[in-house]
Image 1 (tube, rainbow, N blue to C red):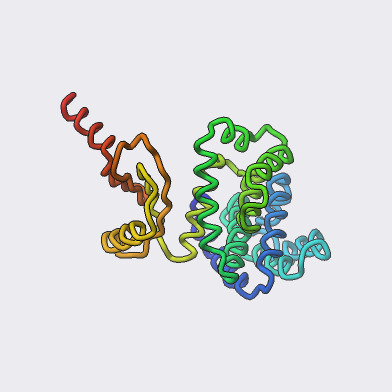
Image 2: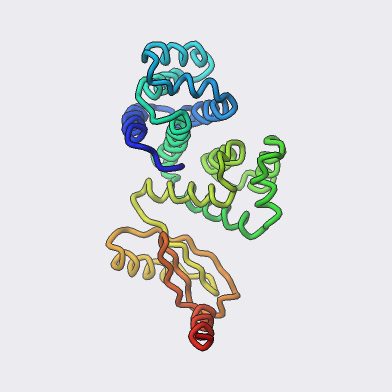
Length: 269
């Protein structure tokens, strides 16, 4: 999600508080993603719902007119709260609804003890897509049929992932909103990690790391960054040896390949 202006941040924070009163997070998340799709297709509607010059009752009335009886009552109430707030622009209102949809599904996963699984599956799915250029192009093609892309994704994940993972990935493919598939999956995995108040370290190793090695590495990174760190580990035999660790924009390259590249640069210089 793009950075929000001050008014939109306040509006989203207020809606997030109301979201925590929901009982069925999965149902509300599904409903909100359907609204994201509608608002993405209908620019006139998103302008009307974000129009702060119009009376709040007019905007909430439009929500009830459109969605009462079609969406769950908690989702309609949440949308009324969303449109009654002031948003900086229509685009950011849609960003806010999308953020709420994602949060609803992630909170649902958290409360059922599945958040770790969802985070790991999103990361692994992102790595699978990143490793296949054609698959990435097909899933990211904005001109392609949405149903065709969803069918491709379902073929890829089958019944092998948690329903929350599948819903989040399908929403990304159906409503990319300027994001490519790999970028979006990495963002979702990051949101899941942030939900657990942990940063994400993307670790590339020449061989798989044992559980004990991962625990030691996580503890070391936690001491370095002074906060809990979630590891996402992938294997790349091209490294020759060692590890490459990326935390945000910072890269710690302890691989043999990285050291050789550094030596070549020094010699060339």
